[in-house]
Length: 237
Ligand SMILES: Cc1cc2nc3c(=O)[nH]c(=O)nc-3n(C[C@H](O)[C@H](O)[C@H](O)COP(=O)(O)OP(=O)(O)OC[C@H]3O[C@@H](n4cnc5c(N)ncnc54)[C@H](O)[C@@H]3O)c2cc1C
Image (cartoon, rainbow, N blue to C red; front, side, top):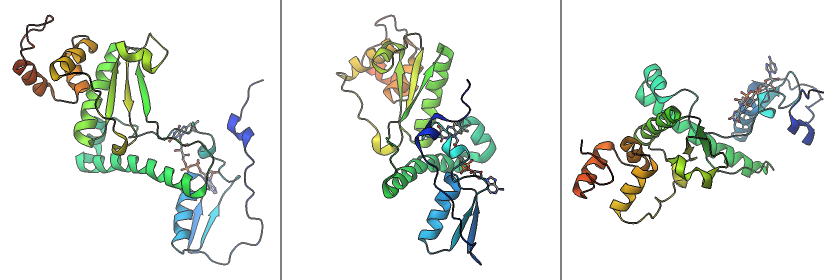
């Protein structure tokens, strides 16, 4: 038989709503007891406002008790669409807000003692084909340049260490916030690091530059300075 309710509903008892008389007056009436309404009501109450939360069903009945529980960084729309629609400045603020939202969730979980196994693990996106991975590389560049946000590209050759699916083309790991930026791997001297990155990127220098956290021009300059052109099939240009 098809199960029509989320599995995690089986693990909780929904808190009962207040059943007494309604308050005569409140400073703020919040409609809806999802995470938005409850977080707003909590904050207002902490600041001394008299607040009532009005809910048509049970507390937390909506999307907030049905979701996958992932606190992802960033916004649904790509940076290009957001820039065109809202401009650079507002997009940057929106992105920063998405990162701050994770801090807020962490604070709420800690202060309210919510047993939800919250962890700041970051998230990963797996490319199904090389074109997706190239798009990841472009996106990683934008995230680093426009949002100063740490993103790690993992090439196909390094995938087995990260996931079990060998058919995937590569993945983009988006880390949750600047505080958790990992140090660059100690991969030998600069020339070795560059050679390895180009190897991992299967000759794609734009991708290698992103993986090394530098621009294509800088990679080109460093390769020239280190005499790496002409080695391993590399052609200057
Ligand atoms: C299947 C699924 C998976 C998801 N996975 C993720 C995820 O992994 N990560 C993530 O960040 N987001 C995820 N989301 C999105 C996330 O759950 C929602 O963005 C978030 O829960 C919205 O919270 P909310 O408080 O605004 O709305 P809701 O949680 O939907 O709360 C709205 C509440 O308002 C009540 N209400 C509505 N109208 C009235 C009215 N007129 N009078 C009184 N009460 C009313 C409803 O009964 C409901 O309880 C997912 C959503 C779904 C559905």
